[in-house]
Length: 295
Image (tube, rainbow, N blue to C red; front, side, top):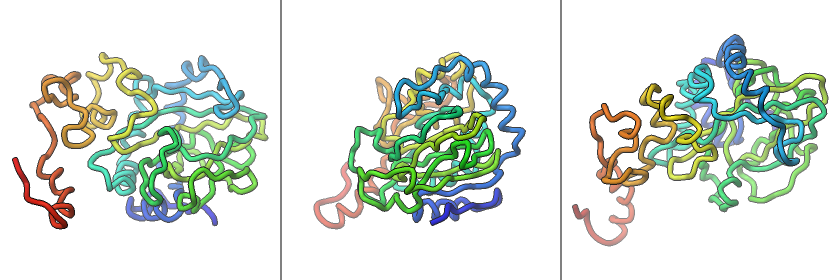
């Protein structure tokens, strides 16, 4: 099964439907390649200072540079890309809210072997999420062209509907090739892995992932982004970083305060979440059984 490719004009609903079916999709040239050059220039000192991975899974010849919100204004734009956020909202529509899960440059160097095929949602302590219940929607932006030779991400389209904890090899996968400025979407339930780099070039991708807001973030955004930077960021980005409730009464601070008040005390107080919206989620249970709302 081939990876579905969409144009930059594609509707979020179309991409989300491909993700529900196949677990993977590509939007070609969603941003101009110059945007990738700008991000790379901003991040070059941090990438150069990053050590290679400490084990086979992270890659002994792969560098993973995080903290992109604090380090790159261009990456903030990618995180907030309207097409991406609309697609993520469709994929994670079962949750009240979703949040940023991690930001990372993945630079695969020459002679790096293929990564073990895995599911990203295994990061949640290998919890067996029900089949068809996606808790993550991930992106990798092509900072360089992604080719089979230079280590393009290996994917198994349709494996999002397979059983958990299966074992696959590189031979079971296909390369998600794409040009610079394109973006690969994949769900947390898709079996995938970084490809082997058999070229003389470094393959660079910007990995930005999103997850349901009631799950712990892989990259701790509160510590990765210093408060003096966070205080200057747009409110929508702050909320996506986690300065928001994950659901009604989930994630408040001390006396029921909205967490965004810690970095933006100038904003109107919001208190807890929408109680009526939370109670609406219980409607089937009330119809089936026992009682009405009590306030």
